Image (tube, rainbow, N blue to C red; front, top):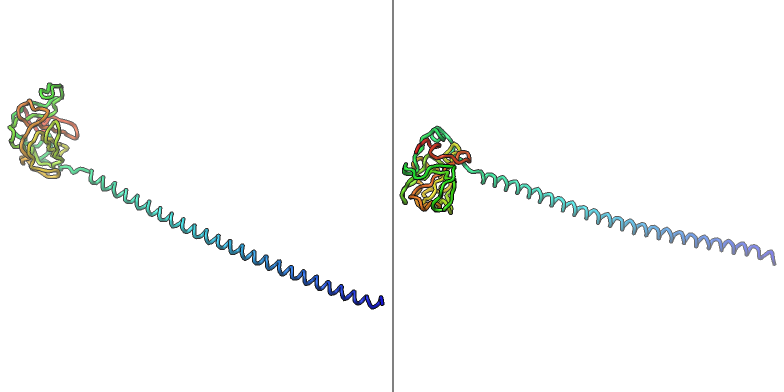
Length: 238
């Protein structure tokens, strides 16, 4: 009886071993399947993250490119504006020649030759203002409504109203000589006009800060930006 039980026991142990091996194999299959799924998910997540990162980088690159383009355009427009402004502010000048050389060429009187107040850098009494000031101009006698003419060929730089000088026509006569015809009533020229020697610029009115003086044209000249005696630069004498 004992002899017959031994084969049965061996068969049971073999069966038990097979069952254990199957369980272990099943466990391994499940484990590796799970690992494969997890890796796939991780890889998928990594791929999505990389895709999102790439898209963000693309958006940043596009934004930077747009910003650089806008900056370049703005700089170009600013440069163009500066050039335009510079070209606009550069004032035209009258060319100098043999006929309009200060101290040497011939100049006409702007109105009558009679002078009622000469050029001086000393302080003198101003009867209208009631103070003392230099008179860096020549006051030529002229009746109100009388003609005022250009002393030489020139370019009209401006036509303005001044509280003290009245209506003023400023002309570049060449050779860096600029003259101001002050106290006009009517004006026949405009800024940018070219005039010829003896051409009528307008008619005389009044000079507000010299109203108590005899009717006259207040005439100022500058040479290279410095005030000079109009008679000297025109080659005239009192």
